[in-house]
Amino acid sequence: MSKLVWGPGAMLAPVPPVMVTCGSMEHPNVLTIGWTGILNTIPSTTYISVRPERFSFPLIKESGEFVINLTTRELVRAADFCGVRSGKDLDKFVCCGLTPEPATQVSAPMLAQSPVNIECRVKQEIPLGSHHMFIAEIVAVNIDEKLIDRQGRLRLDQCGLAAYAHGAYYALGEKLGTFGFSVAKKKKKRPAKAGKPPAGRTSENKK
Ligand SMILES: Cc1cc2nc3c(=O)[nH]c(=O)nc-3n(C[C@H](O)[C@H](O)[C@H](O)COP(=O)(O)O)c2cc1C
Image: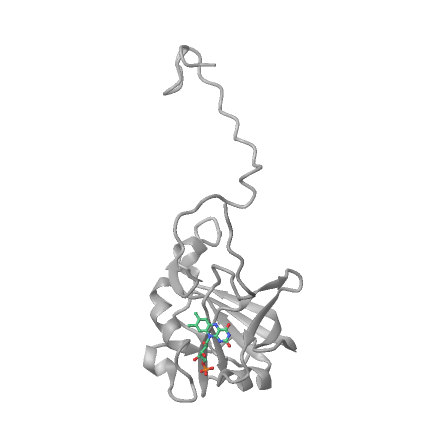
């Protein structure tokens, strides 16, 4: 593989194009954020990096609270709109037909249309240059009940999560494996009943 060397750039893909809600139920705002991720497991810690010129910036800085709402295939158009238009000029909830709903632990609203709402409380703000990084503790996670199967497992694969890579939006597609599959032991086959070889396996092909 022959490589080209480019200068420094924010070249990481895919990233989640999350919809971050902030402000209050009375005056909600929502902006799209790609610079986000998990920083720590216990306590559950996340971050968002926000440019100080965003309308949302002082709302998050002053309240110390925001909600990360996961973006689905159905929400992608709204996510793009909320990432190119500012709450200082218009009400993005009204423009996109989005609904704010009260969160359980923070004053910032959640996005009703998103199946996963992650309530966050800011612990630290780090000015990095173009962006300020808000490091925040995850204080509650709200999940659409329809994503919980009969065994009580979360089926995040069923909500059509969106990804963002190099200027384009995608829906997550083919499952390639599950955690640890590369080292998982194969399940032992049950012993065949005497006189009846299992389908596809005969004394000829048994090796
Ligand atoms: C896919 C996508 C990802 C974005 N990621 C960020 C980000 O990580 N940080 C940021 O400050 N702005 C980001 N933006 C830009 C803001 O969402 C955009 O400037 C928005 O209009 C700000 O809204 P506001 O002025 O209402 O706060 C992103 C936009 C898009 C479309």
